[in-house]
Image 1 (cartoon, rainbow, N blue to C red):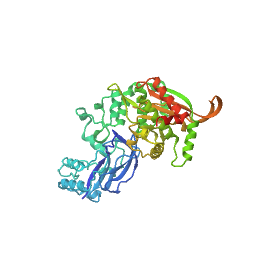
Image 2: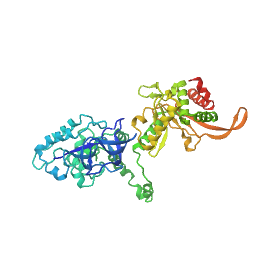
Image 3: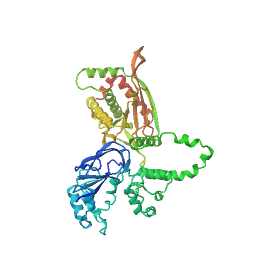
Image 4: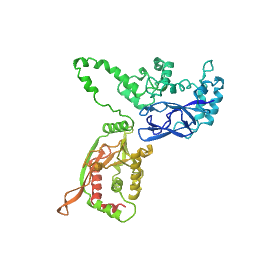
Length: 475
């Protein structure tokens, strides 16, 4: 006899509250082993393969590829302890439910999963058994069982859709008015913020998620309904306006793209930034790199040399390696330099972080930049690779542009931008010559320092680019 168990999207750590299904690794009817990856999801920070803590037969999947699910939403159901055939589950006796549930969970459960599925999992599953009804005609052995077998009959649908059997069953059991007296079932702080900013009372919204969970789509639908009466007279006055407005392509700001948008907006809203820039003669820096690479040993990247210069500059101007605690109204100077660098990937812009960049050699920096860049392109960066930066180096010269005014990577205090290095006329030793020239720009938080400090930092960086021997005085 098989026991049908439900596996929910676990807590993926780093405060992440939702993830998007990128690719299913199993299908309904497949046999899975304990801790086998069953789905690949994309969070706001990385691509993650999610392992299932149960071994058995997959009986249902919830959500198609591209569906965004909140943490705690059902991912799939697994029949453990037997073949998992539908007829076998239908013949299960109600009085055997406690014994079957306990034996199945204890023998087919692993605690080696992501945050939220620890070794206490079996106890949590046994707690569900007390909700099973012993009355005649009730064959399921757990409260979720009535919905699980239905999913294979009707094609599995996204959790957020109103039609799937699991959602309908929950909605029927919990009337919309019942939510007014208890806590609001919202798991995502972004959904709460959206409703709060638009003045929407979440107690008046009926959720379409599992167990009545309110999703972003529910809030957006409710907001659209509130705004519809105001915009109703417009079509009569201008019939051509509606087709024109609906003709544009709509691209959801979610996942990584949504997080980047929120972070950039927050930076522009909270940080009073300013930018200064300077042209520098990079001829000597390029010559020094060529000499290092022809001397043998690992090749040194230009980004690694710029990172070394940044680290030494931050040691001289620690004001820029800081953050602002707005609640305490304090500037927090950070002891170590964790250097972020902007990397363009098929998923969008990401900022991997090189830990302790100030203590690394040029060879070590080159290797770490290469590792993180490859992981970014493959979509395998971990949340730890993308958090904890104290200063960002942005080499936008790879896009063929000379200058830019970067947006600070909140909550950092500054970002150094590097344009392309190209031959230009330059006065060198009193004579006009063709030199390798680069434009450097520094965007900084004006709360942590004034223009004198920012200018001093940028001038030191330019001096090191023009005369790499300047670094020898600080080694």
